[in-house]
Length: 164
Image (cartoon, rainbow, N blue to C red; front, side, top):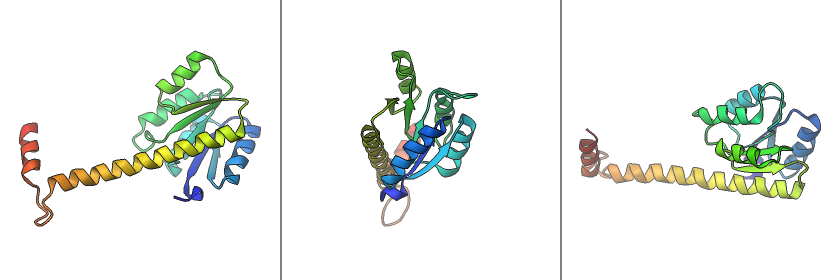
């Protein structure tokens, strides 16, 4: 997958952060979408299905933890990795971010090289995980369907009987 094919959703209520981080990620070749509040972030995530979300914790109306929780509850968005990008660096916040489903936690001020490296790593992990899920579905189907007749095989029937 080319970098330009990766969609990244950047969510922060500060325009300076959106501009700086967005510029750096676009310079790396990623397609970047932005949102300045939680409601807009959830709406955009459902529409564009980003490969990765960078999410600020401290925002008015709906904080990043609430946004993360709502995204993880939705079938369409639950598997999108979320990196928290915030000035809130206390242990309780970091732990809460991970417990809600965040994959990483970067504190402001941050080093742009480090942020780009983390983004790259999590995008590669997401791609590998998606590939694995697809392969597993294919293997599961192959294990249950006879290749010649295209009918369910004995293994499938035994599994179904056991379920019943």
